[in-house]
Amino acid sequence: MKPFSVALADDHVLIRNGLAGLINTFDGYHVSMQAINGQELADKIKAGQVPDVILLDINMPKKDGYETAHWLKNNYPDVKVLALSMYDNETAIIRMLKNGARGYVLKDAEPSDLKRALDDVVHKGFYYSELVTGHLINTIHKMGDDNGNGKNILQLNDREVDFLKYACTELTYKEIADKMYLSPRTIDGYRDALFEKLNIKTRVGLAIYAIKNGIVNIDDMN
Image (cartoon, rainbow, N blue to C red; front, side, top):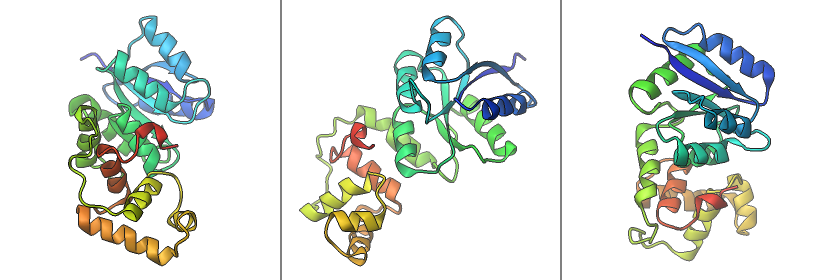
């Protein structure tokens, strides 16, 4: 059976070459393309080199992972994108999945985890991991069909809405407390209250709720 073609987009040459060497040892996979950034990847794809799967770094010059994933989603939706990052940042995970990534892989993952991620995206459509659950991915991908009119918003007070907006940024809870002129303990109270009120267990879940209900826009989550 013809191996699945894999493209790598990462501006770190050693990491990219190391990944290529590793993936080429996996049964059923072959690295067919490497790119130093999203723009080079897009140029090669437009020239006719369309892979089955792309391992896409987030932080790259010229065209980063967010922009590249969005471009792929709009122009080559059948290509499976796996986000690749050094960090398990909640905001980055949400943005990449919303822009079309089918899973999220850390660069320090075990080779067996990378192999499973590739297997899952080509055979199941998504890679579910401890970082990204199936429910999370499905919810984010359904957001494209949600007009964000806020009809499903529960009765939240102004301070809870303010907290939700800050929760969708990269600020720590302590920094959110400083921004809202409240104590960290009070912020913890807002968080726990929203967890219970919205039946949510994580900060990622809070961010998804805020995006889905039009409280924040995904483009504002920088």
